[in-house]
Image (cartoon, rainbow, N blue to C red; front, top):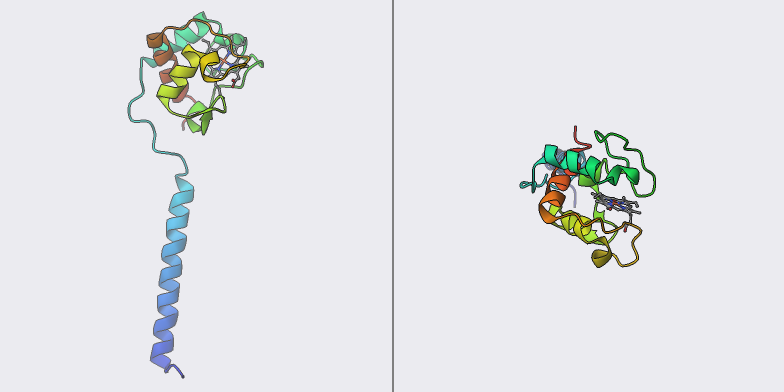
Length: 136
Ligand code: HEC
């Protein structure tokens, strides 16, 4: 079987068009690799920033914008929104971050993160602040 000139040209054009479409989708995917930003951040970010400072979270965690931050006992919390898991255990959602802050041992028995008796509303505010960090 032999393709005539026109058929061959059409095959090449089709191949190039399909390839460009595939590459295009791929590039769009690369440019926006994050999951969609959480639509409903749970609390008041500024109140959260104040609470993070007051409760001494920065003694163990580096947290941008919280004075005396720079602790190295726990992981830096400056890019939390981009992580896949909270404490390596729970899928990263604001609800799960709140859960962990309120009850670290309950979520992750044996975790070195202490239970600081953070109440729910305060944890929500903290999470609202933490998820605002590390965004362009
Ligand atoms: C005594 C040190 C210490 C203090 C104080 C502390 N943490 Fe932690 N935190 C840790 C450690 C260690 C981990 C990692 C343990 C784990 O993942 O189970 C952690 C993990 C976390 C994580 C999960 C991070 C991740 O990358 O998945 C969050 C969120 C967090 N802490 C928030 C807080 C908040 C909010 C406070 C203040 C209320 C706080 N921590 C106070 C030690 C601390």
